View: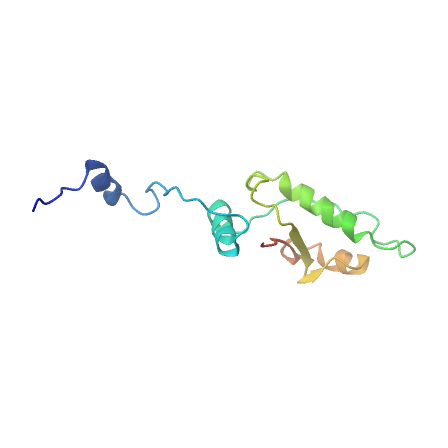
Length: 126
């Protein structure tokens, strides 16, 4: 019985810290919930700040609040950010919340979105 010696490449890889080791190539599916969130964690490891977003016409009570318009404005600002991965990963849409609630009323946005931590965007999963 012959004992196999580890390849030189494997020895060098084991000597490196985990952070510096090359990533294993895996085929992950963006339509599988567990794979999708693993891809997101790899591509966007932590929350980040993006912007600026300027809200207009929040004081006018005569007109209904255009929530879909502001939702799209926030998402388009996010997609221009350099920290966002390619469009082929974030295909399921986003939830935009202010203080944990969706954009519904102008007064809610005017009151809470002045503070950066109150406005949050989360990707939807499959």
